[in-house]
Length: 261
Image (tube, rainbow, N blue to C red; front, side, top):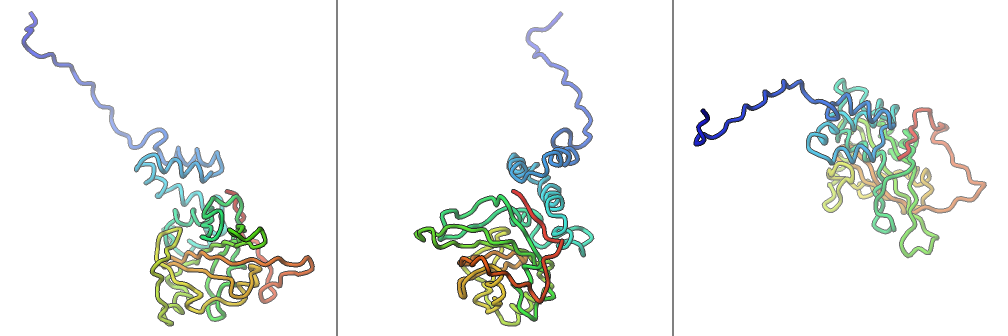
């Protein structure tokens, strides 16, 4: 006979054994999903914002895979000497640098995903002083922005880039040797690190302005402690008969990476 005063006890179902992450939280499953959509960066950003677990998976796997699949030559060059595949600043910062234009304060579009970007180590050589040309630097083509109040005649070019192994680079040695001070009010838009003004350090070669099609004195760029570069330049229109001179007779090589956002 059942005692009505005794509380009912229900047998709890036995817990299933844990075999690790399952379903969509499995790293291999996520990798297959993003491979099927060509590593769409907007989708990765959306997934990484869902939860801490997905954010951790993105940091551990997805950002690196995005960079490797969308810019294989650049990713291999930046991480080739490290057997662990690590890079200065992390893969998440590199992914943002590849696809995000930081804009400028004097433009109508302060920051946006870049629909197209081309990174070139040949272009990067134009940004290196003569005694630093042993460094490897990738630089993007400038993204054109119409200046606020410019009447449509003035355009600001916004560009970005990244060094390989910046801590060991000759460029960093030059900054340290010149006792260049880190900027107080400017931070890297990609990793949040502190930056040096290359203009203040007098390390902006004239070849950089020529490469970008910028007027003299109209170029400024910064390099952060992790080797990320960002800068702006005032662009000047080129006549149809003007041809860009190659750097020391070199032509753009086949290792450039063309990215679509």
